Image (cartoon, rainbow, N blue to C red; front, top):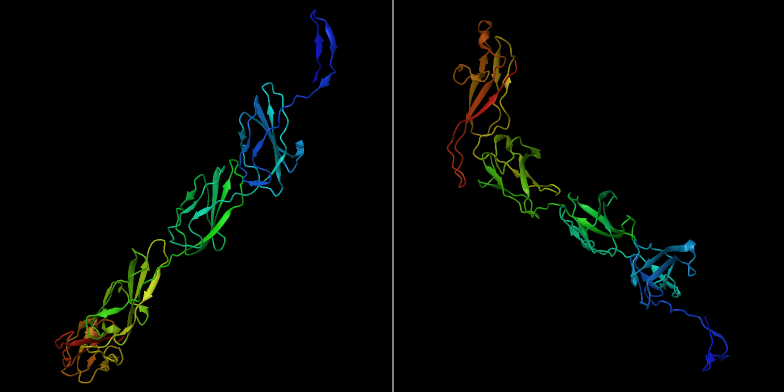
Amino acid sequence: MYWKVSAIDVNDNELSSSQTRQFTKTSPAVETLTPTAGAQVAGTTPFRWSAQAYAGQYELEVSRNDALFSSANRLFLTKAWTTAYTWTKPIPVSDSPYYYRVRRLDSAGNPGAWSAPVQFRVVAEPVRLTAPASESVQLPNGPSFAWEPVAGAATYLLDVRDSAGKAVASVATPATGYTPFVSLADGRYSWSVTARANDGTAMAAPTQDTFTVDASLVAGRKPVIGMDTEQPQVGSTLSVAPLSWNRPGVTETHQWLRDGAPIKGATSTRYVATAADHEKAISVRVTGALASYTTAVETSNEVRIGAGGTVIASAPPTVTGKAAVGQKLGSTAGSWPAGTKVTYQWLRNGSPVAAPPAGASTCRWPTPRRRSRCGSRAPCRACVTAPAPPRRSASRRRPRARRWACRGQR
């Protein structure tokens, strides 16, 4: 603009004028506030500046590593009615700096001077994980994942993987926590959370951590066999008490074993030793089970079953002779404890045959005429008695006859 001063007399005549001079009318540049020069900020950081008089709007421009603000490197150019602005999406993390500047627009839309370029950098704002704690031990149905919110994040991507790298859970959620609907197996796990913008892009690299799941069931001790007699013997009632476990609610099942092999039908906490257990090692296997946990198996000590007051043959009786009509059959007595009295009873298809003469240990196969009365088998039974055993404090028994059956194949 130009200006000069002229003198006017009383008759309104222009007298001499001063020398013409010029000046330029400009408004001061906008003062930027944040980000400050050289600052490292998150991609969602707001831009702020000082207000100016007579400003109608403000214009904000951000460029990628270009202090000259060429259109090729422009990130965005926008107008704002206030003295602060946040872009509609996070500014990408970059190793190169960004520049921004601001200028005033008056009410007529005339622009003022740009502010000086301000350099800043956008760095990753990591998600801060809060639970489970790093390297902690978790229950299989217990891990609940939680993290702190990230400014500007629309959703979070949770990823959980086992030690083999297999994905166990991969969930996008707007919340800052998540609990899986399935139990986790025993082992070591890694988990990560990624903050994401409205368009689904990652705002920063994922934050990772690890934890361990303990799904084991551990008994406080081995099972111990109890009994109702002084020594384990045929007829003794063996029992096992419930175990104490490292987790509440464990369900136990039982299997009694004879020389390590399962005894058919013996699946309760009590078992009565039979003649088949004589001189055998009896033990019990206890299995503990709990939903979501690894099944545990504990086996008791072994007890060897004695005869007690029962007469036990060390070798069974056997039928001798030819199994043919009209042929004579015989029988051995077997081997019995000293002092045992042996008697005999022949059987036909399990039913007693008319007794042979006293003391006889043979019988004759039926004749053809009577063959219809004869089955396919001609067994015999040796009946033995023994003196009463000494009385014991744990069990008192009267002497009684013991029986052993043997069969001869036709």
